[in-house]
Length: 353
Image (cartoon, rainbow, N blue to C red; front, side, top):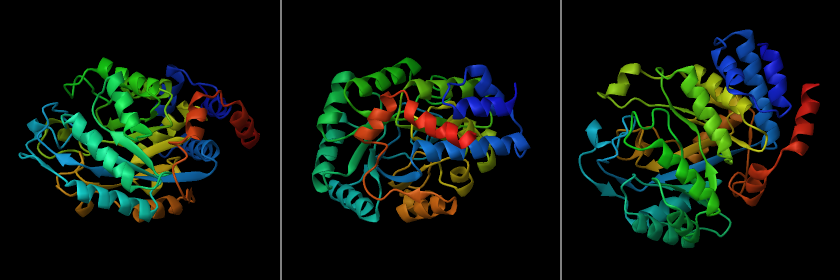
């Protein structure tokens, strides 16, 4: 297949099929074709998001030796990283959420371990919602939930969720892929906007796996997708595979962007880096509290970046960062996710001629 033809097809807002996506993933790093893919991805992200990047901020509420035992997660009981439970006091959660809001975060996420009490998560969300400005977007990053629970998340003041069918799900975790997909459906039916991602990418993952999960993220009709690499947890089975380079991740997230339509405005990567932003990532996260990729109890002392850090990295890649509440997690984002992208497509075609 001709890579230029595949790029033109993507920029014309035609869905690439699995074979075509695989061809893009196969392109060697630092080749002329790889450069074309990343340039096209950057351009497509710019068009889809109207040249605006976003910085979202996440507060990790608790730490616990989680029985779900996802092998890529520092919280897994099997990893032995965290042996005791701990959690942030509500007053501190509220203080940090207001701090993120003051720093200009476009959305605030609350994250918990998969076994965190659901009712307690909702109670925390309600109190945080009261403390923030009405227009500030509040997003939930929790375990799987039923339709009734999704409705309760919505009623607690969350506008959306982050959820993913991860690479290795059911093999490297005790979570069923079918259950993850049910949660996607429950979120949408309850009126929650969905953000997702191709993650956590490791050196052992095959092109077939990357393609499969890329298509799943597209079919979920999220407000953003993207790609994030796995951070190895020391002395665990998956740590033997090492860390995917930022250069390779830039290529992977660019292919994901080209596999998505213009109706999905966001394209994330994690952790934040300039080469990723230059390859089409328009969404980064600042983090405090617990972090499933960090062996430190407080991630702001280690892997976690600030809102200002994320903004500066995006600006280094010539992105303008949105000021105000997230557009991705907004009614405009919902309309985009449900649209046929015909108007945006016309704009894109004018850039390829």
